[in-house]
Amino acid sequence: MNINNIKKQFPIFNNKVHNNDLVYLDSANSSQKPQMVVDRIYDFYTKEFSNVGRSVHYLAVAATNLYENTRIMMQKYINAKDPNEIVFTKGATEAINLVANTFGQKFLREGDEILLTELEHHSNYVPWHYLRKLKGVKINFAEINNDGEITIESIEKSITPKTKMIAITHLSNVTGAILPIKEITSLAHSKNIPILIDGCQGAPHLKLDMQDIDCDFYAISCHKMYGPTGLGVLYAKKKWLDTLPPYQGGGGMIREVKKEGISFGDLPNKYEAGTMATAQVIAFGESIKFLNQIGIENIEKHESELTKYGEEVLRKNNSVKLVGNPKNKGSVLSFTLDGIHAHDIATILDEDGVAIRAGHHCCQILHDKLGLSATARASLGVYNTKDDLDKLNESIYKCKKIFDR
Amino acid sequence: MDLKELYQEIILDHGKNPRNLRKTENFNKDAKGHNPLCGDKVHIFLKIDENKNISDISFEGSGCAISMASASIMTDLMKEKKEKEVKELIEDFLKMIKESPEMKTKIISENEKTKLMSLSGVKQYPMRVKCATLAWHTLTSAMNNSQEETNTEKFD
Image (cartoon, rainbow over all chains, first blue to last red; front, side, top):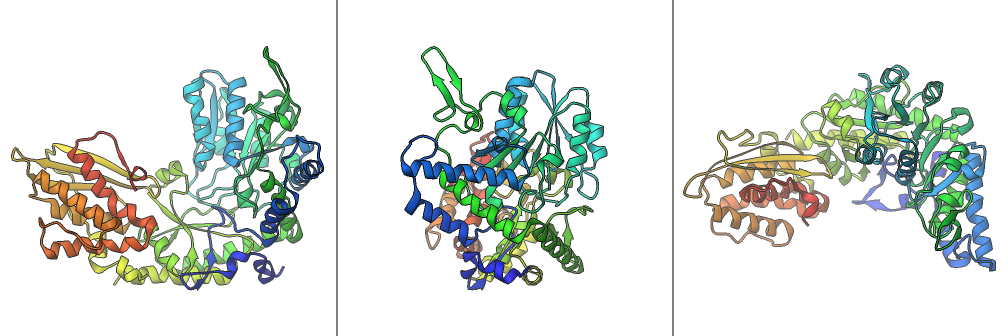
């Protein structure tokens, strides 16, 4: 795998940031886009544009086929059983809201419990929080261990006879911990509890097989997978999409509308009300092609080597404290520096063209638990190199120099 | 852009060793401020005497060097000021941070103005302006004895 050739496919790297080459270490936030994805959006709007699933003219039929083709590509990419198990949403956030809303409506009653973990991103907590007021449900949090991991024991300990849903992240966007989701799913199912996986950080970096994992729901953010913004995917087992009520009402999701009542359309239309993010869906097909061309196993290997290298380099830097030390770790390096706030670090690094994120990364529960108000985070993508991590380290030394003068 | 301008010695000094970082005993006004974007938090305590003078001002909180330095320099300057003067200073400071090249107020000395102007480096860093203004917006809330937490997202 030649990273330079891969990097060349990303036009953003042709630009300078403060007169420096861009060292992009914020892929957990959002990944950069390869030229083929950008081109696909342009081509669709300039040559092929039409709304999908409605009109019968040439362009409409062609656009509908392209749109549905991405659904099939995604089904294959994550090895779902049926293309109708792929629902397009405006993001992973909407995917989780969809499940929380419809599952909550139909199945949850006062006193029922939802089990999350302390690692969850706000997007896998806030949608469930609404059910506290709406339904009187209780939310429990499985606790992390000292390494910033969630073990199967921690989940098992937190399950009660009232647990009606388990919703957990696949890969922590702060500590990088990869959760044993297959084992947790099997534990949940042994107790008849459905499970949702927040796959925002899992899907761009790890090989996915829905039939093997056997989870009920898996939420995906396309813009973190080298795809366009404004798009997410909800994988849900067909039995759930058949059983749960529709989420939003509108055009495209109905079968028959009368003054007296309405009947809803079949899958996948039932959950795709209104005009969808058509160009994004079609362009996302190119993201899947891009990932397939490199091979997710190769991406996993490259990013895992880089993460180890990054940990090594940062550990040698005495002022750096890494946040979390999970045995099974994704390509996220969160850290703090003695006496320098994360936002000051991010501003100083930015001057060197090094783009990282600083703050609580939408994980306030976790930061409270860790006793940190903010952390700095370098996160990796397929285009990163060891050189990028060396530059990160050099810039960190510069922070110390500025602050210690 | 020059980082040395943003992180001037005076800012690093106040950022690392903030003055008035404590809680005023028997405070009679206070307010909390929060910058949701980055998690900076500040809680300002005021003791205003019968003549409407600020007899003591202090703060608690955590945040980046800019936000801590801003709160530190601000609280230093506000001591013994009249309520009216405090309002004028806040207005003048916020104007300087956003648009004006200098401070117009005559309440404080040129030397003190220079101290405040050291925070003007954030003008080059739009995402960091809120770090510099958090304490000032929160002071306004404290003066009004507003129970609602100041949220920098509400100000531009």
